Image 1 (cartoon, rainbow, N blue to C red):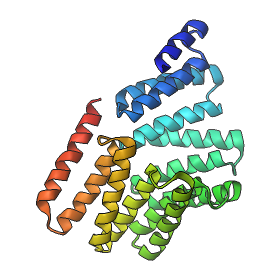
Image 2: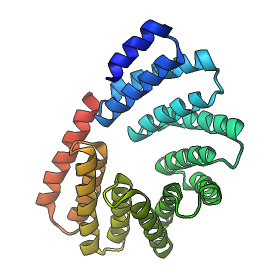
Image 3: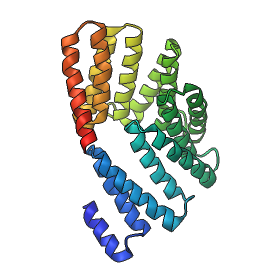
Length: 267
C-alpha cells in the first residue's frame, strides 16, 4: 500500500516533493519493524535529503527525520553517527517550539539515552532531568512520556549502585506505562527487563529470572521472536544464567541471540 502511494506521489509531484518524503518515511518504518535496517537507512536518508532541499535545513519535519535516523543508528550501536543527528534535532526543536516544549523534551531524552549507552552518564543525567521537568509540567505526572524520563534516570541510578532510588523510579515508570499503555506494551517489557537487571545486580536471582521471562514474553508477542529487543533481553538473561552456573542453558540462549543479530545485520 505504501509503495503504491509512493509511486503515485512521484508521478504527481516529482521525486523531490515533501509528499514523497512522507511516503518514504512510512515505508522506512515498515522496514524497520521487519528488522530490515539497511533498507530503512536508505529510505530515511532519501527522505531527509528531500526535506532539507524543499523545506530548509531547520524545518521541524527535518528534525523528525533526523530523529528517526538517529534512533536507527542508536539501535545498531552506531553512536558516532547518531550523536550529530540528535544534536541537530534538539537545536531544531528548541528553535521551532521553544525550550519548554514536549518535543524538546523528546530530543533531550534521545540525546541523554545515547550518552548513557556511550558511557557518559554525567552528560546524560542533566538531559534526562530537564526532559522529566518539561514533560511533567506540560503533559502531567501520569503521562507515558514522564515514564520514559523516570525509567532512564532509574537506569543511571542502577549503574551507580543507588539501588533503592533506582527501584523507586522503575516502579513509578512501570505503573505509569501499565496505566497509560497497557500491560502488554513493549515499554512495559523494557521496564521489567531493567528491573530484572537491578535484581540481578543485587543477586536476587529468583525475582530477576521471573521478570526476564515476562519481558521476553511481551517482546516476542508484540515485536516478533527475531527482533533486536528480544536478542538484548536474551543476552541479559544469559548473564544471570552464568552467575547461577546454568551454563548449558546460557549457551542455548546465547546462540539464539547471536542468530537474531546476525540476521538483522545481513538485512
